[in-house]
Image (cartoon, rainbow, N blue to C red; front, side, top):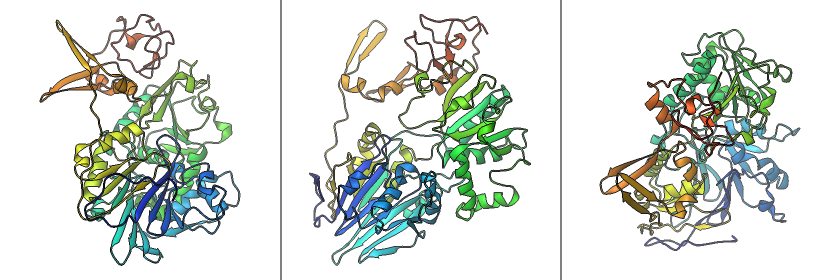
Length: 549
């Protein structure tokens, strides 16, 4: 394999290195995931989420691997599979049965797509080559999403590698969580795991759902229409099931419109109903999962001709994340609340990224959390239950993955890797683990005291980190002593709103809450130093203008 870069540390009593991982793409941003694993003489491609597969061809006639395993149908893990099949028709491609049914949604514009992906069963090892087998376990996250256990057996020993793909330990509306009890104590030699949210900690899934339902309910009660751009598969269908079953909406005289590829995703879910959890199948025996105009709230498919008409009375519209939102938010409709799903490390879009909406004062943009990836505690919980020798982190911003590799609880037990694309990782295994040197994670700054004011000066390494802007997006921080260490953390807008929810601000007070440029909890005044940032209700800036409405 080209670009082989062995790691410096080793294990006592190690065997010759039979395991290696070469990441073509690790999804540090939006480039997708594509990993080549070598187990002895065999090469296995894990996922193909890259749009351009030229790196896999390199002008050669032979395929880049002996077989391909796809964890699930999201584009960042699967969008390159069709091109890969067209380039190498004899290359076998495998996934779970549900994933094979959902994959065509990645190429709806292409006619006569061949059935190139072969279905594998759950929890049943399948041998592909002499000594090489794979077994699929449900990974949560999305219907059909799989964690893949690869096993390579030699006369000397057996090597194992587990790749989680995207995983979620908690149950959601349409997917059961990863069955941790089935994987506990597996002790793979290598674990390749996603770290989308780094060390962040999320509220319980039901809490996230209730917060979202409450926000939508409040908007509808205030006369708003709610527009929710979502991916084709996953969040959109989860929200629809939430709205069908949540007590705030059951029986309510309300229209829910579904447009674009999200509607096609709903159709695909209906076709694979036997693959969904038993609770969902039982629900479907009593009423349709999605399309129903008889049961309130009514759930309807939106046609292109209707897009300019919806929004004249409060309703909910779920559409593609790439849709032109102006076709819904027209002057004679609304007001509109646009709810965008939070993505790890992403800020709420500025008006420049939604130029068609910026001039409309009746449009509010906010985000919500409905996570489909495990948070930091979920990641560490899975690692400790599996007890691998090597852990390779992919699928997350480099800063978030660095947070995970810097955790003492992981450094003390496992050999940690977070490779960049194109950097191979040699994975020697043995009986005794030698702890690698910890990476440098401490930074020096200055602290000055003058009277009752303490000034903390931070080094350039902190300021240049992309997380700095979101560290305290309200502009406020909290400092407290933790033993002999001073811990500083940013205060989120949600915390401030909870703290001040019982203190209503008078309309006579000159503050952000009464400013004409405050919308969606952010400042939209381009002349303000707070432009584009979240603002506290009590905040104020020199270009404040009272809202006279």
